[in-house]
Image 1: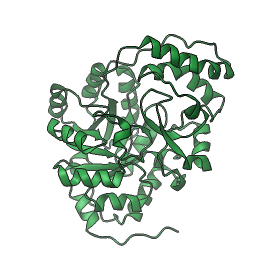
Image 2: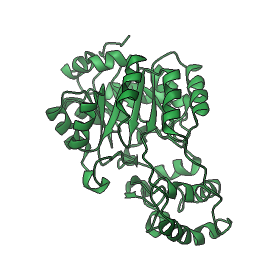
Image 3: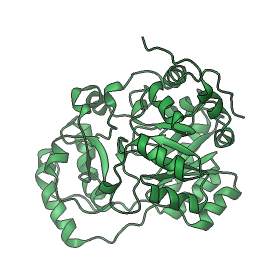
Image 4: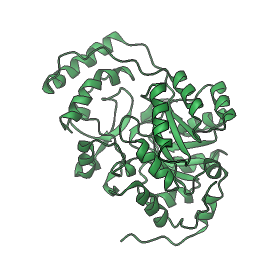
Length: 365
């Protein structure tokens, strides 16, 4: 049985955070956006209903799909939630890199029963059009990664009453976000699963642990900090709060919840000893991301840039998932899957709050 940490002034400090009050949450527990499957309206709604902040990753959705997902979420809860987008600046396709990557993927495609060449890629939705959908929806919180929206877009969000949180993987990025006037900054530590949010310099130079990064940002900036990366239990939540974060954002911790959209084979991999071994790889999407090491991450060495590699591997990734081929699946995970618990989302939020000694946290509006 996990011991409950005695209440301290941590709960009182977190409950009085203006950002948390404005976000309308009861507890400093944010569910990370996990675009492409693991998050779902049901998961986000359950977290929000439990007093945290549920979130939907909308980076791959058309504006119409974003509005549909938000409507499904609002049908399940009246509590506040967040929507997340990638702030993309896609490079032009490099024909030589594209050909090299396609040739490298060909034997894996054949192994899965696919043709030698992938179908023509589907363009990712226009970011500006996606953001217009967010403005129509008016979630309580809008979060973003890979860059910073334009000033007029941030101004439009503020005018709509939407709180804005950007992702930083370094102090330099934190300073850029603070200069843009965001309401909060997510400190994405190196332990975090999924895509790295780095937008200044190379991701490999910004692999800073969550506790170190959080303390740097708290000490050097004035904007509220939300810690993310490897936080799985109340002890991790409490540590983030003690270092000055106003909340913690957890992704991998929610991936085994029954409400999550995590694929069955991915769930099995997360439960296995293999989940203790993660790598930062560009193999699946062309952008640095942390996931469980497997044959695909080891063998694919020459990916094209994001989002072109993402398009090249789309059919292959879908076939691998359909066939349950965990050796070739995209298995995003943070570094602390060994502490995963299979609980309904509401129970997990309650457990985190209890373990961190936050039972006395004052409800938000």
